[in-house]
Amino acid sequence: EDKVVQSPLSLVVHEGDTVTLNCSYEVTNFRSLLWYKQEKKAPTFLFMLTSSGIEKKSGRLSSILDKKELFSILNITATQTGDSAVYLCAVTIIQGAQKLVFGQGTRLTINP
Amino acid sequence: NAGVTQTPKFRVLKTGQSMTLLCAQDMNHEYMYWYRQDPGMGLRLIHYSVGEGTTAKGEVPDGYNVSRLKKQNFLLGLESAAPSQTSVYFCASSYSITGNEKLFFGSGTQLSVL
Image 1 (cartoon, rainbow over the protein chains, first blue to last red):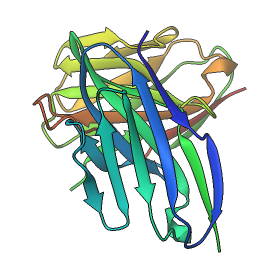
Image 2 (tube, rainbow over the protein chains, first blue to last red):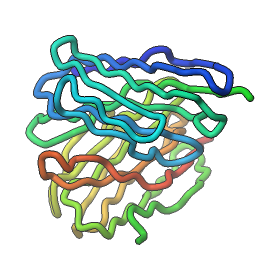
Image 3 (tube, each protein chain N blue to C red):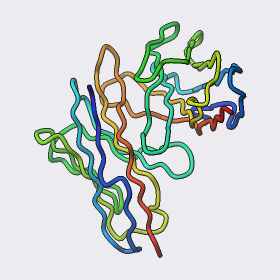
């Protein structure tokens, strides 16, 4: 069974802290790993990773994939209250057709 | 750009009632998906479609049916709603091209079944 596991499930930090969110996976026919941010409604896309060891960066957010150890991390530096959200990790698999398998999400709360 | 549009945004049903959720996308995407999101369980795939006229079961298909008569529309039906179907439903779409498979999501439908 294809599985994506995120940790921690919940995290509370103070503004300015740096956080690391984890995503491990066990799937067949891996194509890519994606990170999404979900505030009140629809998830919004952050990163797509396909190659090991290549960091993707956008402002204070960065992510990297390790295809040997089957995990990815999402780092957020100098956190702000606007970073409070649920962060979702998903893996694209090919099973006849392409499908995304999601983890449970990490609920990140940034306190002022 | 409308992107992915879902209707309705909220709905309350009684057990045994039926309803249809409508998803429309204007990006000419081949793939369309229906997910449900429950607390602590992330997003789970209900049904998906790889093109007009084709549908397939996802991880949690029981109690739902779908149809994709036109490329831009993907309908999710509940024939006889049950309290276990209380959830937030998201429609999503994507291209099928390798390297361009990120999902675009609709804004969600909050469904309560009493």
